[in-house]
Structure formats: C-alpha cells, structure tokens
Length: 348
Image (tube, rainbow, N blue to C red; front, side, top):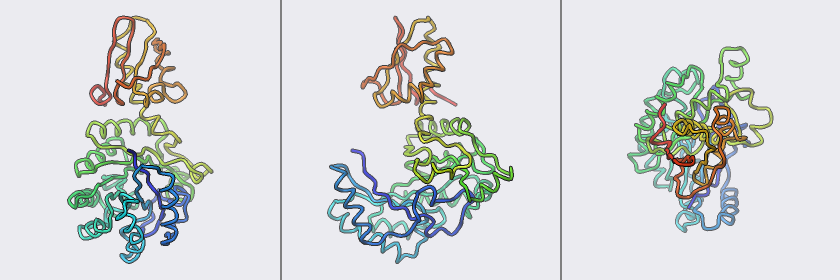
C-alpha cells in the first residue's frame, strides 16, 4: 500500500551556504518558517483523516535539518513521538547535506523515529560541486550515504544533472557512485535557472548554458535506465509543478510539468524501435503493455506513435494488459509477437 507523505518545508533553514542554483522558497512555495507543535499536529491530523488505511509518514523537506541546533531538531521531532508510538504515523523522513551528518547524529535521529534520510548530493564530481558553491566534495556524500546505511536507516540521494561544468558522463558517474555507496533510492532534478539566483546571473551573462528540455530528457533517460538496472528506485524526476514554479520564476533549463512521463516515454520509444524493426511486414501492429504504462507507451501528445508512423510503422491499437509487466511491451503483427523489456533489452 502506497505511503502518504505529510510534507513540511523548512526552506533554507540551517543551510550554511547559498548554492548557485538555489531558491527553495520558489521551489516549495514556502517561506521556510519552522512549524510549531500545534501546526505539526493539526496538519498531520488533517492528512490522517484523508489517508484512509494508507500508512502516513512525516517529512521535513528543504533546508538542512541536521545543521539546525539540536534543541530545534528535538522541538520538531518531539510532537511526533506519541504519533509514532500509536501508529498514527509510520515513519519520519528528513533532508540534509552530506557534510552535516555523522554517526552520532544518525544514531540520535534513529532514536527519534527518523527512518529515511535524503542527502542533497547534486553531483559527485568535485569540480561541479565547487562551481555550484556546495562547500563539500564527493567523498563527503559517499561517506554520508554509507553512514546512514550502517546505522540501519534508508538512504536517498538527490542528483542535479546539468550544473555548471557537468557533462552526461559526469552525471552517470555520479549516479554510479551513489549506487555504490548504498543509496536505496534517488531523485533526479535537472538543474533549472531560477530568477534571482547566482545561476541566473551566470546564464544572463552567457557564462552558463543550461540543459534544454531535449538534452535533459536524453541525459535523464540514461540515468533512469542505470538506476532501474541496479534495482534502485527513482522516486521523483523533476521538480513538482506548483505556483512557485509556474509564475515566471524559471528562466531556462530542463523543465516540464510531466518530466517523468516524458523520460519513461523515451525509454519505451527506444524499446519499440528495437522491436518493430524485427516486424517489418507492413501490417498495422498491436502493442500490449501494463495498464499503468499506456500513456508512457503512447507518448505525450501521442509522440511515440507519431514517430513510429513517420518511420512507416502503423500502430492499430495499444492494449492494456495486466499480464505484461510495467517495464515490458509486447508488439504483435498478424503472425508474430515479440516481447521486450526496458531492463533486459535497452543499453545506452
């Protein structure tokens, strides 16, 4: 059963640096003020009533949770203890920086009910990290992930391909290194140029060229495929569309409100190209896929089917079929069917 996350945004709180790309208030739509006990309990109560039987977790996003004074961390976590004990909430999740974690801190957090720690890695390349003003190196990120895992908690890594000095090879290497460090899941956030940031100044002065949408999709489909093959969940691709991100704050970069779907669609497009090449009898094809993947297979605005048509491949219909796994498709002509898998049949 899918977990429901109750989010509290503490934008910039505890952050020792302002990175070149960062404007968390625009991203979250939050001023980043720390919630008091009553605000925590009221919001959790509201979400609990609408969650039904789904498990509930509380998450503190943005900022650097573990760089807050310990007394402040305690104040935020203390109201949750009785809810954890009663089963009203099942877990607590926090976000932090690699250089704001050590074994003692992780163990203390575990004792407060924190089960998941997400680390803002962004890149594992030291030159990219320096250009972004992160204030730590890649080894700090690897050590933080390893520390979380050693203490028995779930570790997540947030990666930001497309920062100044980044390349597709560096982005792939960064993902490989966080996988090797033990990350259980990742989020992929292609770099965006937000108004008012240092990155915006570099962009306007033509000292930085961000990834275009097409470039970002190409890089991210390779990252997604690498993660899928490694058995590492990609729980988010691209920042969530909200008022802060659709009111003119984005100057440039790889942005689309359904970026994750675009990237999954590209993987299915590439798989379909491989399969349909072997069925070149000119007969309109039937494609079968998992019900949850029909939109990805068809493509945004039917992009995949239109591209196949331009190659002379006619698709009669796309059929939802529960017997097909979520990363497979089956393509059938009159006399032959071929099944392919993103995991087993795609390589970049």
